[in-house]
Length: 516
Image 1 (cartoon, one colour):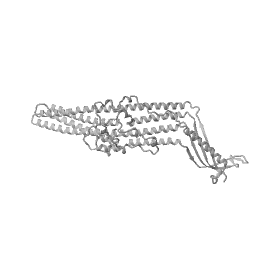
Image 2: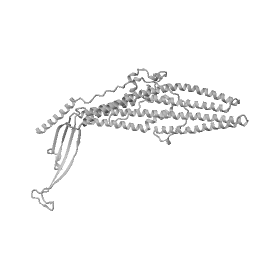
Image 3: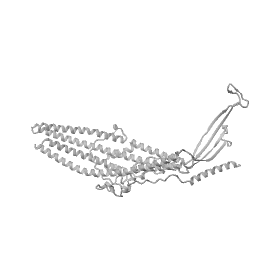
């Protein structure tokens, strides 16, 4: 079999062009635009490694008492609460939306990476063409061609490929930005999960606070009923005045009205919890239960590691990285582009002869293009990218400063409320003693019923304040855990190799004995 020297020469030229392009791409490892560096946060260095400003006078838990990482709500020791929070991961629609958005961002990374590779396409076509002419003896009668009619058929089966080597790093910067965006989406998912969990726990404590206040009001109504019975007996024997009976009745009805009114807030809390766990209010109910939980001792992270523990801070930082990559994409537009294209296939006017050797054809060649004038469009795009990066850095620093504020606010609230709770507990005890004295004096006829009413109102008001204060302390405990990141770490973000079209959303980390 004899070799075709022309065909071999063509193959050698094609291979030479491809090898040259690969060599150019391999040698051009540069990617224009600035390499990303994590921005500094002004003022963060003011914190020492072992102290918060508001920590003085408040003793957090020791490291051995650290929270369950991931299942941080278990520190409160409420099985009903544990079950409810687990349902958030399964059924909450806001969390499902954030998870889908992460998968969407991951798919964008796969799409950007596809630009590293050539695009290959194949097709097959059939064309029938008619040509009419008066030349060659044809005549035109009444506008109709009588002769010179020609019809041709064309059948083609081409295979084409095109490739634009990433000489200046435009594709690499795009992938870099999309990876950062996907990581920001993963951090957004973690932040959404933490926010929903914290909202559910806080709403649950508000509901249980309402239950405890209802229990107090029920006890108060029972006590007021006994006081009314006592006053009525005193009136029947002529010891008490009719006004005492009316005052006792008024006080009883007022307490009953407050007990009924409390049902509105409780119903709304229950409905809110239903939505958080992905159910309609009609599908969900919680039986009343007394509030027996006390605010736990919460271990504090060192201030120096806070910015690695907050998913919202990670979102802002990854957005800054994405904005930085966009500067490189905009800068690459200033440089010429190289594209390689190749086409080969079969073409013939007879279908039965389409795939025979004489029907083959091919073409290959590079193209270099450069924009000479664009009216300032590239300059504007680069300026826009740099301004976007500056805005993202400012946002990251602002979110970071707010993170320190959140922790300081929560520590201060817990420290001060703990002192207030101690004083309030003493006030409750003293009010109970005062009520007992007033009742004994009234029975003995020493004081009027007004003294009893005053003592009863004081006792009830102090007990209700104590319950409200307990609920506030529990909610602030949740706020501190959330401010510390709830056990999340920046190391949980998926790396570039783990982000692709088939990525699953990062699952919440399994519990492990570590601090939040």
